[in-house]
Length: 310
Image (cartoon, rainbow, N blue to C red; front, side, top):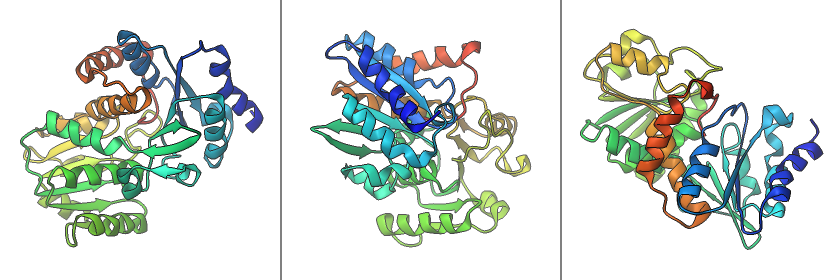
């Protein structure tokens, strides 16, 4: 499909919408049967809001992630209220925005774009969604020393959330060592030197850690497997997963088998969606109701599995 056809796909929901409809959507690659459309549209309906949430999969559209700016402009011109942005566009989208929220600027990653008065403002609800999920799902865990796997957009959001939640030290591991070092340096600038560092010895770091957070694509439907050897997991190590499709990733299953306390990716998915919904509509959603709906959706076989975290 050409870029012009992709732009037509962006415009199509606007052409079908009723006057006053809140037009929103998701741009990303491999998003498959994302749960964002039903989560947003059902909550809107329950609140009496006419909202459409469309899915624009770059793989299906046949356009590269580098064209996210063109798709963004098409959505703005078509009258969209906003868009969620996911892998691999959370950082690529930055240069196409007019302004950033303080958190998005600090993270250099955006997962929510709001259009207002012809301007595009970038926000990041990933970090707050993770922090809220950690607070409600593992409320009393020790945050003294945490190992973070992944230094991309999701990893940057998780690290920000960890320090905001009171983490003492975070050791960051990524296949791209330079990216891990860059994230550690950025975190040091915001939260103080010595608290974040790029790790070099994963086994030693996990052995000395209180908790482990996974924020890479490993475990998604298209990227099966474990992000670290299962033998490193132990009962006194809590484990948090960012991937939510499937909800029971290989890491979640292995951690539970090892006796660890586990936080799956569902809470972050719901809480980041709830905050984005509020930004799109100006109305606070019922996050508990959205969580119940999320549980129903993930239990439905026909919705298994999607490929990326929204």
